[in-house]
Image (cartoon, rainbow, N blue to C red; front, top):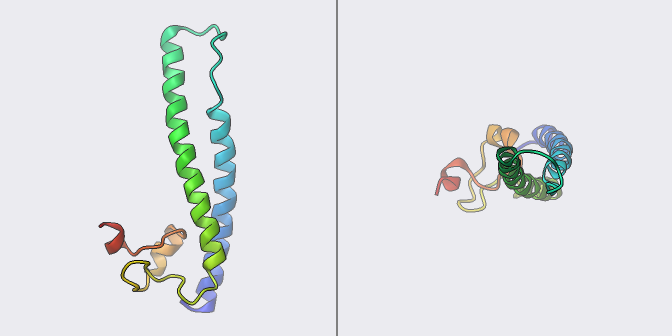
Length: 111
């Protein structure tokens, strides 16, 4: 990976961090407790509880992604950045552009 590719990827990581933080704020709002005093019907309450649990799962996933993106940003200038953690081969640049937090190549990620 040359310096220009690294710079483009760095900008992509920073952009992804920003959008992921915004998504986390939205999801945190969606996962607030549902007050039992709300005068919604039983079915509506069950639907709201189900939606809340889906939002909680998405929130956990987004927080994990944010941690991985922040780690990638700290490691981007490392000579080993862009190499698979398992097989040590280079991760294809397009994979890194789509998922800058990737630490494994496609082959190793499938295992």
